[in-house]
Length: 267
Ligand code: PLP
Image (cartoon, rainbow, N blue to C red; front, top):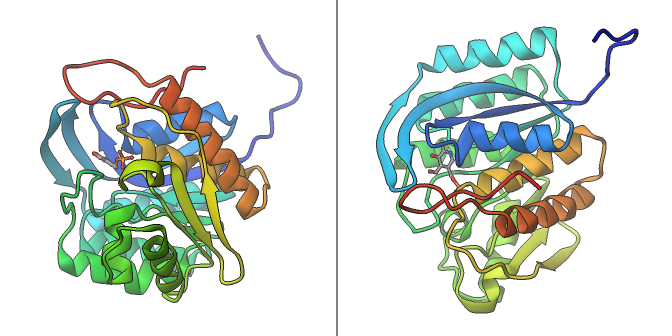
């Protein structure tokens, strides 16, 4: 079938790692973009060999290869929103931050992937410093989980008040808005996220979904925010729509493999 006129669709870019199991990273991001009818482009930072049981190996791409992918996409296609995920090491973070600055990349959603939802640190201390000093100040929104909020905010995050204080402190790093995610908290707080944009401090609550198949939740949320920004939604609306999307993705989580399955994108 041929078309008389070409479709015009928003374009989003994900700068993230590949998950061979298809649950998180680039694979989750591209599915999320597609669900939102946003054309997905990608700059792959690292290749993980993983499945539902765990990560067996991680190979970083050279920073120059990450830069080349970003430049290829922006020079020709152009993007309305960008999401960063697992940036792995200091060289890649510095290179991405430089591209964001030089190419004036707007609508930047930074998912500061550094600690897994179980609390294991995924990137080294030097990379954390670069993330904090070079990339987060350029973010339209940064979406730390509990553990990432602890590192970036420099405090223990155990209560709602701690989440709010962390959001205020991370905002001071220069991001336009902060969403501290409650997914790694205990009890009721698992369904609570805290938003702070320098003016409004909001508690955003969603209904809890009981499932252990939560792999890719953070990636999916950040990608859905980017997709909604690419479609022209304002930031808070983009976040609220993205939270609803993740809630549904959790309801439709996939029971695949022998371990922790991923959130679903078929509904
Ligand atoms: N990106 C990649 C490539 C990963 O492998 C992971 C976790 O394993 C993540 C991001 C973070 O995943 P989540 O969305 O579950 O926080």
